[in-house]
Length: 159
Image 1 (cartoon, rainbow, N blue to C red):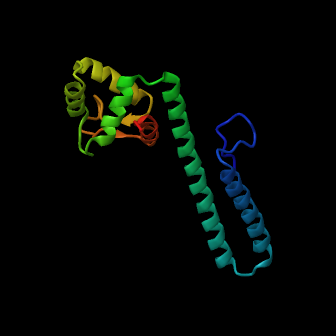
Image 2 (cartoon, rainbow, N blue to C red):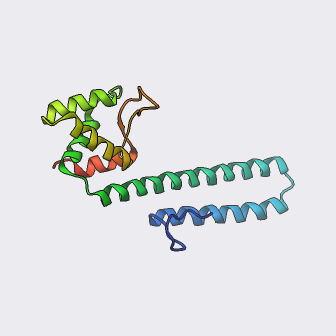
Image 3 (cartoon, one colour):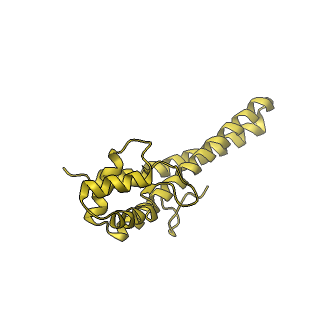
């Protein structure tokens, strides 16, 4: 199983991640040995299926983790402006059914800045993967923070 987003072989995001991968690989080796000596093929096949499912779940976890890592890298590389940090906090506070255009109006009024400025800054947050919202082709989708956006909103919140 290769779970690395890094070019460095053997990179793991946390020490526990490495332990999980090593333990899963040990479990697969033991299961293989067990399958050679155990006459209960039904039980063995059930165990193999469960271990395979666990491995796929772990791979999906790492894919999501690395996607969030990429979004955070993109956001930090862009160096969020004070307006964008404030907008992230506002998005974190809005109800789950707030649409993009409604949010633009709210932020424009709350920060006393032109709607075009709000739209431009929110586009930057969307492009950085920090917010998700409807677009020209997919209207009616409420604005929400992505996982990376929630992390960044926590980082940029005052106090």
